[in-house]
Amino acid sequence: MEMSEEKEVMLKAAKEAGRIIQYYFQGTFKINNKGSVNNLVTEVDNHSEKRIIDIIRETYPDHTIISEEAGEMITDSDYQWIIDPIDGTVNFAHGIPICCVSIGLKYKDQMMMGVVYNPLMNELFFAEKDKGATLNGQVISVSEKDDFKKACLVTGFPYKWPKTYEHPIKVFERFIMEGLPVRRLGSAAIDLCWVACGRFDGFWEYNLNPWDIAAGYLIVEEAGGIITNFDGDPYNVNDKETLATNGLIHSDMLKIIRSKI
Ligand code: IPD
Ligand code: CA
Ligand code: CA
Image (cartoon, rainbow, N blue to C red; front, top):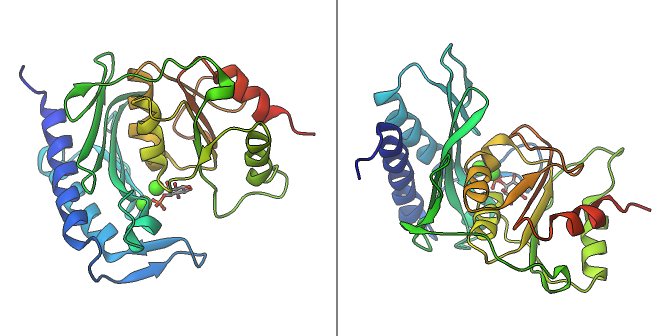
């Protein structure tokens, strides 16, 4: 089947960024922090990001680009590329092979396409609106588990949260008190993809950014999953509350998240 030009550009950018990540992994590179001591950016993030932006710009010089380190390059175009050059930078900086490049393409308000590529595990997740989701070319779908008590969950913790908001550890505690296994991988994009391929049954996190979720969001939906905010409302990439599940345990998870005492 012929590949659309957007898909070709997206996959090329992800694979080249992946090559850069792989090359530097467990090697030497400069690490800086942004704001807080554990919020890291490495020279590899910038290197990966520059390559991705250069590749997109070669074909689409007038598209809007929103990228974590480089910021927003807004144009009049209805197309928006949303990029995280390394999601899971702390893992990358510590030699933990759970990190990826994430690139999403939005047209107006609709996510059209997304790729999440972890070169260290050789896993490339891809989805296109209404065309399903794949892992290394094989169609994937969310799990069929409907017994919440047997679910395996994943979450992440923000570096900062407003005082008015319940501390994320409290929500974590409620799931643990239910006796459920809850993992914390350190890459929101990978968390979402692992829900999409059925390894996890649900993922929640507070305070993510559009570049963490843009691609993974579409991958979850195209794999048959559901993604909402903590009110259960339809999701958009600017939402600060993210709940992604196989659909079958969504209301159980919402109940626990919202059961603040
Ligand atoms: C981080 C990861 C992590 C999540 C953080 C994100 P980064 O992204 O997705 O899982 O818990 O909130 O900031 O900084 O590695 O690109
Ligand atoms: Ca990120
Ligand atoms: Ca990042």
